[in-house]
Length: 124
Image 1 (cartoon, rainbow, N blue to C red):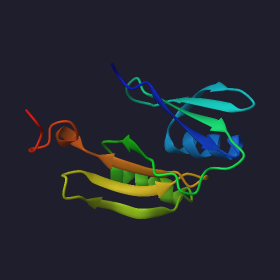
Image 2 (image 1 turned 30 degrees about the horizontal axis):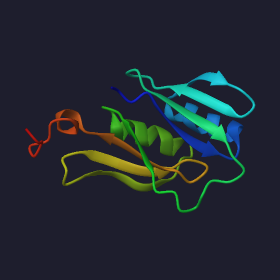
Image 3 (image 1 turned 30 degrees about the vertical axis):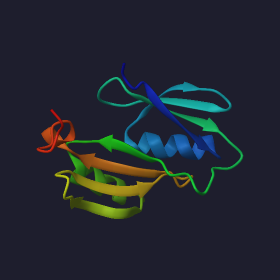
Image 4 (image 1 turned 120 degrees about the vertical axis):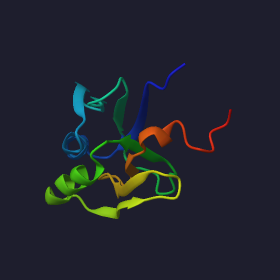
């Protein structure tokens, strides 16, 4: 089994498409109420479905990995994207930054390297 995609709600597909395209994803399906993106690396996809409102108490965080975290964050800041947390080294051996998409979904851009799947505390 493998994870194919994650789908979130969005209130404005045009604004959302512009945001995720700026992030580096490529739109591969576009209808009046749905967008599906391809990630630039790997086989994962990400989709957005038009909704009237996004629940304010939604507790998901979407993680996107990049080897060039600091450069990506700099590029996004220069394009006007605000970050909740600038890139920082974390105790779980990742470097990560936090931001939100136009509908408030929490995103984490990170570089986990070998520790993403094989941290020193990985179960046998």
